[in-house]
Image: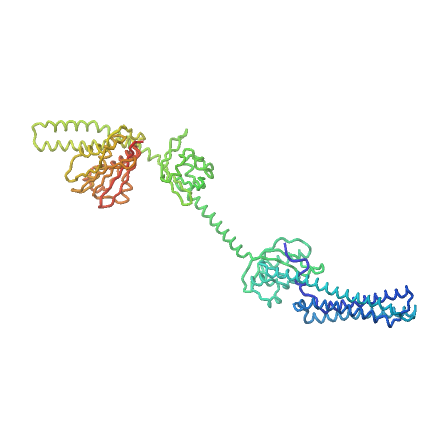
Length: 632
């Protein structure tokens, strides 16, 4: 919708000159004087008073002149300040207007003179009486009244002219300082008006506008379409918002949009008014956005192909715990249709997923059991959770059903083998103990050999016990704790004293003062102490001191075992609780199969405690166990 008035500003901002108004009003004054003369003559005829024509115009002209002088003085006083700021006509327009007004005045004067002659003849034919003095009053008053009326009319005309020009100036300032481009062009395309925004955007100066044709500014691609719309507007049709291409003075291409309307003067079309806005930057941004969307679609398409080829399942979960992405493998592994996963809450879509597992910051991976169906057996998935900074998460699923089955078979074999080995091992240990307790007549070398048999049988028995414990844990049965109250410092002293004493590895006990009663499985905690202290002895050099400290801290009893052995790297420390893991495989002199610390961790967890390891290569290892006074 255009803001321009119905009459074109470009054709109404030129004010009429002072002499033009003055000549017109003088002509009206003469006609008024002739009208008053006629009234005075009729008065003479009605009252039958003598009147001579030669005496009549004198008071009329005198009164009219005085009134005109008074009115003109007021007019000039009000007009003086405005006239200095008024823009007069110049050049050919000035002389054309002057000749036109002189001709109009001459015509009015000739008509007035003819009427005066007719009135004079009429007066002489009716009566030729001498004029009386009182008759001078009427024409004088009429003349003065008409003169003052003309002066007042001039004053009111000046005021209305000033108001009109002030309104026009406000419109002009509004259009000139608008942010949008405003232009007025003639029917043949000549540029009649352009505001500052138009000139600044296209790079033109005021001196260039008279030589500019709008069809030269338009891009050739939109020229034919624009001319067609202009012809439609001249026929009275409505034209929707236009989008055009303009060329700046330097030849750069701009894209503008806006509306256009017909410019009328006295009801006739004289040009077109347009309000336009530069949308080049917006168009460039739209093009970039389209290109980005296209690239995004292509990347999404490639990602779909890539995810479809991945064997593992992948779920993208947003911060509201809605599944935004699920590849076909995830649907297959979870035995849920892909459509039932997308845009649904995680725990609603996967009903067998434990609630709160994803929100737990300590949970990084877990085993997910997929329920058994009529046609399919139970499936085990290893879920790896990767949390993002914005609250979203990526859940990857790997099928470990086969690995679980192999692990189950391995545990069954270990359990069976351990049980089968325990029977002959018990016989070996029994006979060796009997032989050592009451040795027969034999050589010293035979006694040493029997002692070795007994020691190795004990070591093998410990390994079998570890294997059986691990088998129970892996099968899901876990430890069956035989809880009782006992003195933890006393248990530590007894366990260490019953271990094989070694002068090469002195053990320093620091158990504090006082007795501390704990609730737990005495046998399992004894096994825990043996495993930790045994590792410290095995991995410490000869002469290396082992420190065992125990103290009560709050509701927990803290057991700490330190050595000055070979130590471990950060990677080895992270893996120390894995089954069958040994930090130093190269040293075959160190006995064990890598189950000790794994069993220690399971015992501590069964009691509701924590175990921490701190180690550095070449500087030893420190194992700290936190046990609650009342086991869970």
